[in-house]
Image 1 (tube, rainbow over the protein chains, first blue to last red):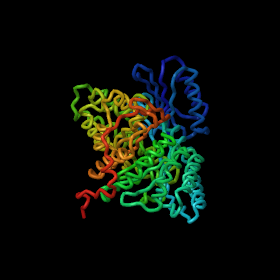
Image 2 (tube, one colour):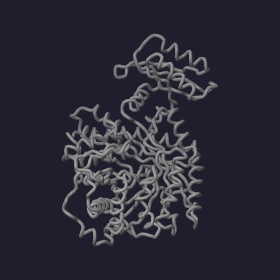
Image 3 (cartoon, rainbow over the protein chains, first blue to last red):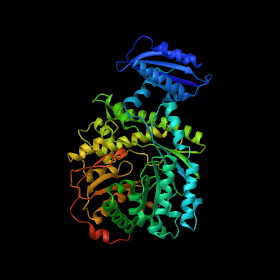
Image 4 (cartoon, rainbow over the protein chains, first blue to last red):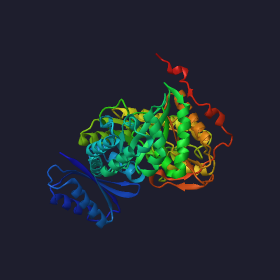
Length: 90
Length: 448
């Protein structure tokens, strides 16, 4: 399994999860977990997904998601999951 | 999915300038040697463009996939004075251009290693390399040079110090910025990934990927989240924990880069390296610790604690630590340092004291162009004395600015920032410097 974390930071509005999950489904990326919180007064949504069955390149997926973010007026980051674990692990 | 870890990392990158300062490929050029300088230069060009062809692309891929900025990609090579044999100084530019062109061809930001190690004496190659520096540093773009003039084992080569001070003056008369690419070291390290002083030491292997971490903004924000009443012990713990995380990042990105490039992973350099951006400043970390202005009384103590805590936190996070490992205090590259220098809270004397407890030394300090070369030599000798006596690396990267007056600003551009021209003591040191010879190694260097 190759896991990625998609984070959405910005003003909450209807359709964010819908648009992202639609894009992920299109390229066979499986969503494993979704969670949301408030970070410094900003809405933050985090999504854990598996990209091992997708046929598209990581960069292509990332650029598409960033474009969706621009459309919605939110900042979308797409990162491989290991980085978050590595930084905190002893 | 650990929500708090994700949020913390995103915040560090987005708001606190967290980045990997550099991925540096260390490359041995010893097998490029030839009795024909043109042939050697062509060997150098071929080797670098072949071995480093993927470093920029792979670094960019890692940057994209993990969402961590990698600010610079660099190459460090074997000290060039070891390869040049009898090449006269006027022809040394052949090597420099080969290095500069090769670096540009593969797209790295800097290439370091136009270097000589002269702490115990100068070979003909060393002399020719130093003599060529004014031409080389003003005619090449991304090539960096360094000269080691002292070590705890060998003492200080005062003749080399004088030679370097005259060279710095010559460079400044052609192009003041040239000196931003030249560092004069005592106890230079062989695996330093940071510029201007990176070179691939003689005891290193064929090639290594070395990582320089950064993160003063992250440390500052962590300290700022503590109340002003938090004890110094709590501060220390916070810095250690933060340094651990930053270093883990360096360790991870470095091992990933090494794996993808197919080279062994060398070291993580645990240095807090500032950039001219506000919020990415070592001065601001020290001020967050409780100083009104960096340079005031207490600065050396705060810096000593910061430097030590960064190392203690980082050592456990990394497989192998090396390079300079400590806080950098390059004046022009740190917005907080410039502010303090402008209102005279920070001067060369205080900076010198600070270098006794952190890595490197008088770094990116601009002075009026009329400074006598013997005064530059004395400044270098003072720094070298601190390093040699205390078993640590020290360095001088000084920029005499022709026509510049104390208090003027001189723009260097990019990561080098804006240099504020600082005063030096008018009382002369020329008799001491002109004595020449060697300052012997300190007694405690004889350990066998």
